[in-house]
Length: 257
Ligand SMILES: NC(=O)c1ccc[n+]([C@@H]2O[C@H](COP(=O)([O-])OP(=O)(O)OC[C@H]3O[C@@H](n4cnc5c(N)ncnc54)[C@H](O)[C@@H]3O)[C@@H](O)[C@H]2O)c1
Image (cartoon, rainbow, N blue to C red; front, side, top):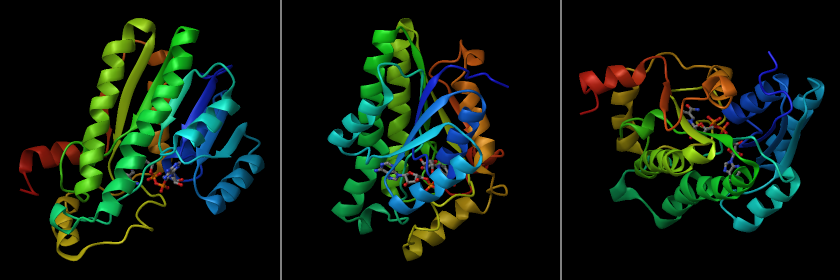
C-alpha cells in the first residue's frame, strides 16, 4: 500500500525499535523519510538495514534536546514536511521521586518533553506555511498511570499528552493533526539500557504483572502509519493505546494501587 506516496516524513529515534520500524514502514508505503537519532553505532546498523532493504531512509545525527541540532536536522528536510513521528525517548532507571537525582530528571525531561517540543515547533512552522500535515507522538502506557516506570518517565509521558492535545486544538483549523500512540511493552533497545532501582523496580513489577506479552515494534508502526495518513483525516487529538489491552485491565483492577 502506497498510502504515503510523495510525502516527506521526519522520524526521530529512527535507528532502533519503534522509530526504526516506523521509518521502514513509511518508506515502504512511499514516503521519503528523514530519520534521526543520537547514537552513532545504532545509526550505522540501521543505515545498513535500510540500504539492504532498498528503503529511502536518510539517517542524520541529531540530539533532539539541543536546539542547534534540531535546526541542523530541519536544514536537511527542505521546506516541506508532511508527517512527523516523535519516537525518540529515554527511560529513567525506575527511579522514584525520593531517589531522583537532578541529572536523571534533566536528561529525561530534555529528551522526552523538551526535545519533542523542539522538533514539533520546528516542523509545525513548515506545516503551517505549507497548509497542513500530521504529527504522531509516541507516549506510553506510562502516560496513563505511574506503575510501569519511574517518576521522570511517567511525568514526561503524561506531559506529552498535553503537548499532543494543545497542537491538535490550536492547529487543527490550519490542517494540522496531532495524535498520540501509547504502546505497552514492546521489544526494543529501551529496556536493555535501563538500570533499575531496587524497591521501586519491584513495585513497578506489580503493574507489569498484568502486562500482556510484549508486542513487536512493527505492531506500533502500523498504528503510527495509519494515524499519520489521510485515512485518519478526521482523527485529531486522539490518544490511541496499542498495548494488547494492558491499560484497560490496570484501570479497572487497580493492581498497582
Ligand atoms: N519499548 C517499550 O516497551 C515502550 C513502551 C512504551 C513507550 N515506548 C516509547 O517508544 C519510543 C521508542 O522507544 P523504543 O522502545 O523503540 O526504544 P529504543 O531505545 O529502541 O529507541 C529510542 C530511540 O531514541 C533515540 N534517542 C534517545 N535520545 C535521543 C535524543 N536525545 N535525540 C535523538 N534520538 C534519541 C535512541 O538513540 C533510540 O534510537 C520512546 O518514546 C519510548 O518511550 C517504548
